[in-house]
Image 1 (cartoon, helix red, strand yellow):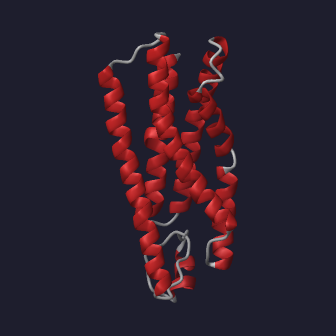
Image 2 (cartoon, rainbow, N blue to C red; image 1 turned 60 degrees about the horizontal axis):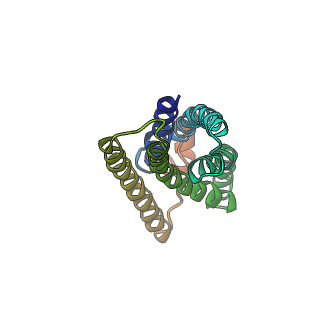
Amino acid sequence: MITAHAVLATLAFGFLFPVGGIMIRLASFPGLWWVHGLFQIFAYILYIAAFAIGVYMATNMRMLHLAHPTIGIILFVVLLFQPFLGFAHHFMFKKHSRRVVWSYGHIWLGRIAITLGIINGGLGLQLAQRTRAFAPSQGVIIGYAVAAGIVWLIYVASAIYGEVKRRRSSAKGDIMPPPSYDESHRHRHGHGRREKPQYA
């Protein structure tokens, strides 16, 4: 159960959530928004499974008050709002061609959650070592730290790149529509020119 919890949570926060965030900033193809959303929902489903196992173990071992399970519970609750904020962000951006309060909530909540989730993975490995219930080797801990650190740096770099690109486009007076879904949408925004879809 400990191994399953660790693997599922690591897949969610150490790979899938960050890759979904990187994708929305660096990729460009029709329907990108839907792919991003489905990708993140799949990651959340994996985390729900990891969360259920973790709460069960923490309850039986009387560890719910410790930092690792507490942060895990907070992340579970916070991420419940992300799909709704994401939909609001997308449709409000289509309507106003700019970010609104829902946009900043979705974007920054995601960034904080991914960062906190990666950190919490390290705390989980440390907790496993202290309890001796499952003692990961030092190599496993170092490997997680290096791999998760690299993924996080790429994620942050993609976020910075996306913000710089958006501000440059705004400074030039360009309208940045959300990812297009069909040819007619491109024609409406690009006046017949085939444009590379941008995200908010």
